[in-house]
Length: 293
Image (cartoon, rainbow, N blue to C red; front, top):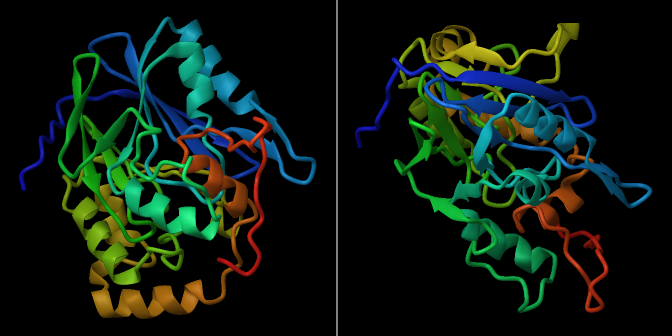
């Protein structure tokens, strides 16, 4: 299907790196107004102590307030397994709608079973303000953004395109980082390859912004590249790598990886749009299912 790509629109993108989870959150301002979106916010957690704080989110809020911006959207590229979303906290402070891919319902159904959630946990995506399908558009001020369904890492992964900037979530890493794992429940290496090709069919000069970076080989943390750079130099898919070769590499590599340290709290919180689950008395609690993932 044709997507409404508009390379004449160049939003201002401010990246905020969280060293605890190697996540980059973004403030994306419409170049024609004072409206903005946040992509992939982070809520801080000391998992060992069971303590949640909001320093990273407060920094995003402070920048938006300092610049006099209006927050229209809080976008989640997918249900993250390595950090907790601060979307409801930010929404309470600044407003805006929380958006995620429509396949969140698949993720909720899968992990609702794993975490033995009761009937109070709705599996219809109703915790979010908007469920986005492939090609759906939304407004950030005068800028039209749209969503690309790019599953493989998870079923609900979306790449969000805002003018000449695309936020790829965990679909791609920087060229020297390759690609994200595809072995979580609902993930698939072949599907991930197809999604990456979808991203790489965007214009060569499209700016690509990563959700994570780990500084391979000791280089400084970085989060911006381009379609052309990824096509030419990505160590997993660049230079015409075939689907079969990618799947073989990805499956072998995934078999060696440990689970993310924050996967259990992250999934429980993020499938609820950033809300921490509570027990029958209303106290925030997190579960640890044994031998379930």
